[in-house]
Length: 136
Image 1 (cartoon, rainbow, N blue to C red):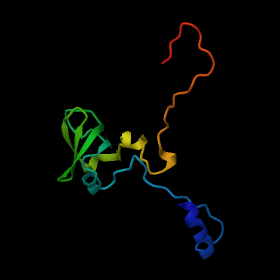
Image 2: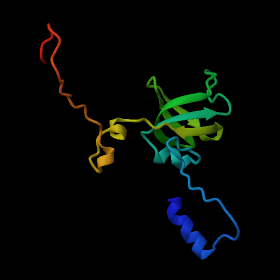
Image 3: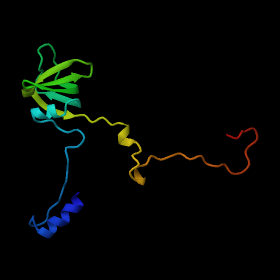
């Protein structure tokens, strides 16, 4: 992307003087900052850290599980153990999606020669076999 944009910026002289063009994205562990982010990524895995324990009966400040949406300024998360918790949005300090790699991330897509999974070929044996070995 930067290789395409940089020449355009140079020709148009949008930026005076020297510069370093850097293109970035939120990445795999996208931060969740607004309440509607938690709704938008419903059914995705997330990690949530709170400023203080949100529940009187638990000292826990870190939660991991599947987002189940929002309700009344609360983020609903199904913890890995299956418990559904409602965490007040106001106490959330940091939250990120957790990307789970699957077979589709590494498998054969067939869209180009470079993306095909390597195949193992049987090599021919040359020369005489040692006695006592059988041919496969």
